[in-house]
Length: 188
Image (cartoon, rainbow, N blue to C red; front, side, top):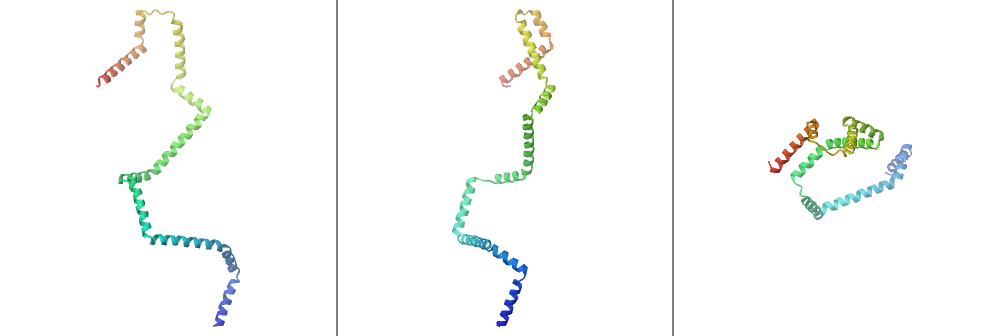
């Protein structure tokens, strides 16, 4: 029996003398403190789980507390369905938010770029001739100031003014406005 033990020991020693085995043992010895810490942590966690599982009273208190908090939230079936709908819509909402973010970034870039502002202003003026309107108003003010001295207003002048198509359209607009306002005031 002693020779069987010696032969087994010799076989183990021969295997341990191999380079691969020596490297493995060296690595294991270096990592031994870390392995011990992991094993201790696992033992502590298992002990905690075992004690909680055995302590039904603690479990019951935790469940009761969770149920109480859920009841305070007053979550109904409608809330849960809405939450599910929101979760299902998240991809669409995300795409929309990304597009909105792109638009906001574009607007920020345009607002901070003087060339873009000038180009935009020119485009607006092409669509709505703001500068032309300002020019018309300036000239009108100048003429009015010059003609202030001639303050008499004749009936013939009033008749010519009433024949002007712009004045006729303005009077028609005011007449329609007064009809609508009168109708609304009567509550029709």
